[in-house]
Image (cartoon, rainbow, N blue to C red; front, side, top):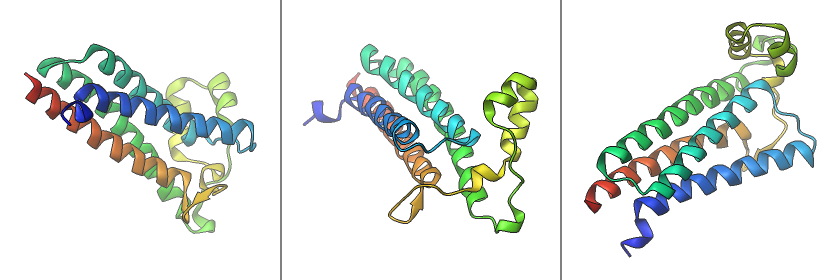
Length: 167
């Protein structure tokens, strides 16, 4: 039973969950032709960062200090993801007359503007980010991303405390 909840397996779970979520997002993009908005792309980046750190942690099998470092790094990715997904859910809940106008795509903005200006434009939002193209159980993809960011953060904290007990 102890091995079932070891910190390594919990970190591996985080990695596999991120991999699964990203795989499904790319499936929706390339097979179902649902193009991601800029906020969706930044949520993907947050999942990638969490997943990669979790993979390294699963391989390393850290003890006390290392587990804190991995948890902080996973936490940074998760908190950024929560902020982005929360903003995205908020935008999708706006009345149609309050939704910002659609702007250019992320590729164009990155080519034409400095990174700081691009980030400002992305987080100001665009009409494409308020569109709901996909739902599961009545909730949009950004909502489910928000749920997964919170869940994965909780798993990272459980892994942290499991690694502290192992010493």
